[in-house]
Image (cartoon, rainbow, N blue to C red; front, side):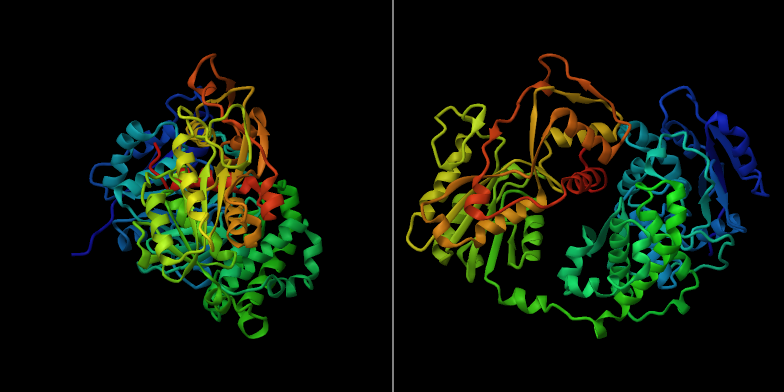
Length: 630
């Protein structure tokens, strides 16, 4: 028997916008929407309070519950469209709006270019501007928010709630809701101009439930071109240039037509290049599919560039750049689509196959895998070994990168270094690079580089030193070389959970103050720079390591306390407040020693190149969307 949807709904609003909310509610001729006002309008700006009441307003007998924010415009036929969506996808959450600068906006855009009616949501905040849930799921939101809310932004909390219930989130293609342009009362003005990735003024008619299976979703966010790449049941997020290299495209091939595009000079250089990169990658994903088969294709492309740079440009600047960016996007997509027959391929597959095999292992959990992927981008044929390592596992491996448990953000503990050294000796491995953080190192306020020295029997870094000494003994055998890298505080996905940066990120996300220790200095390393340092140690000439393993410190940048806290806030919640930590509090304890630097460049030829701000933003998003950290 076919389910007949019965819809109830709410418009959530601040009392200052009660009139707008009531006008919106009256657009439903069947009167199914009620206005729900912020119960504490004088409290801190947040949508959480009103959202809890709005989702609790499920009418008796309703099968689905719709919540709209008060600052929206609805497409003609919207309510019939919502009922139709409930009919074809009765168990799913349905979003009728996605921001033009979001990962989910890019998923919608990619799906639209294939002619699909739905996009599957990526790992990101749930788009809550116009969201419909099955009634039972809607009714359970309040208890989850009360128990697990902990100050998270409303849309992040909703994402975490839907994930906890196993509720799939689908996005309507095209969007049938648009932002009206009213100013944000919930504190979202810092996120730039808010627009739909693809809004249609008339709702589509009959729907089917099917998705288009996407494996790569290029997106432009905060001016940075990135790709979501499906890996099994989840997604990996990488820079678009890196993804294109992985799939065989040289930078020269990608730039060939960009350099000849006249409109690129009409917009800022960074915006032009990042828009082109995203469009080119989108074209390679779409392949020979033609726009004529997708009725909303051109409208979808129109929002890619402006949405991706909306954080950096004023509304007036965005308006002036829209047409040039649209033209650049169309040209980039077409170049990517036809690149297979016109542009030079790099032959990456052949190069990687011929490369010496590098085993990547250790006790650092998912960070080990991430470093392995980055090493693959640098030309290594990577053999990832997450579990116990045997000599058979290492047959044919020329080199090993071992990441120790100081990096473990997810409880990774095995395999141990002694086990790996024994297996490496039996398998004939010739080089091993041991990598750990410097957080546990003793030795006073400054830690020296150079030859390994015993920190003393009671030093906090004693256990780590014993592992490093074992590597030195292994490397003392003729024909073997080894290196010991000590990393500054890592920044990026899968970074250790107990760092000051991770604590600040979670505090900023959950509306708590960032506690500062004025005298603290932050030495940091981007996860991509760390991989580059491991690569340098794995590939440098043997004579550079002939004197035995030296301790080499890897540091991308140094910031004082206030400066780094400001960057964390900018990457997470720009309105986050900082306060001086109380004297003697935990926030003032455990200051890491200062690492001496210089050998990474002198001995290995390494220097930092990765933008640390991008790594910080990736770490913030990973903590919000991909972990159960709190």
